Length: 374
Ligand code: MG
Image (tube, rainbow, N blue to C red; front, side):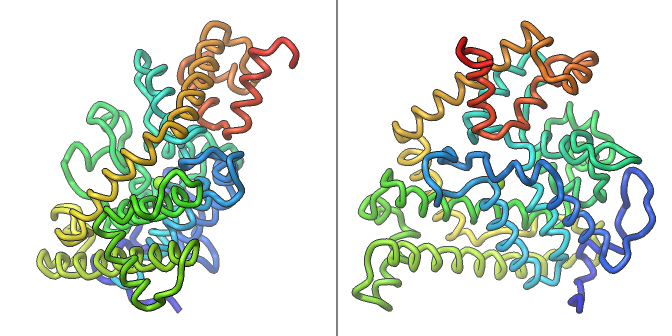
């Protein structure tokens, strides 16, 4: 049974629809169809071999973009369900939100953006939309996955005014300074909850972070103490998990409570009201501050850890080398990208590189730069 949706939820029956008309789905809703198409896409399978923070070959237990996306979907759906919003739309947006990510995480994205500066730049949000709108080639009648407007709008988390003008319908809200659906707002914060917590977990697992260090961070210390109060003798991985699960619970509960209060305050009666109101999915001020402290800690101690920096530096080199080699000689691109390169060479190269998994990029680099490999 589909739970009753709030009047301001995104409702599949009143969707603004797909770019190419299709017969209505049978036995599932429009948003469920979006989710199914995303799961069956090539881009989705590639997420398994794309770095979140730790490069795939560093260990079997670290998050990849795929497991990250699944965690975001789990958190997003819980929040949506509690607020009587569309779980299906939230799930579709969260599963697709990182489809446009380059190999090697943020350093890969930064490197590709630097290479693309003279040609309009590279932004992973925009690229996620490009994957579902253009790059997936699976259907006879259209390029892309032909998703509903609401899923596409949710995927495009931010974008410049210049790009917004080029994007048509999904760009409108940036020009009008409006908000997307509450489901899209949830996807955004579920992403934040997921990565802050799994980066703590992976950071500890990798040995790059230590418990005493993390105990200097308010939100971690508070929940570690609570875990030890319940189980005074636990230590190691068990203590980490008992702490992290409490943090996730606090964040999800706070997000639900605060968002419900702010929905009551603004009292929207339709999705249209949601678009005109300020962002209503939010944390309380206290939790927001604690999250900022944790993020700052992770930036300094994990993302800028010398061992992570070494990998980032290698990643930058690989992406930059590949880009420059293809730009100098587009004839080195595989045939399907050569065809694309005829209209816009740098963009075709960026599409090719962004689609690579970590290990594919490493192999491709070897193929182009090592004389021993053909
Ligand atoms: Mg993400």
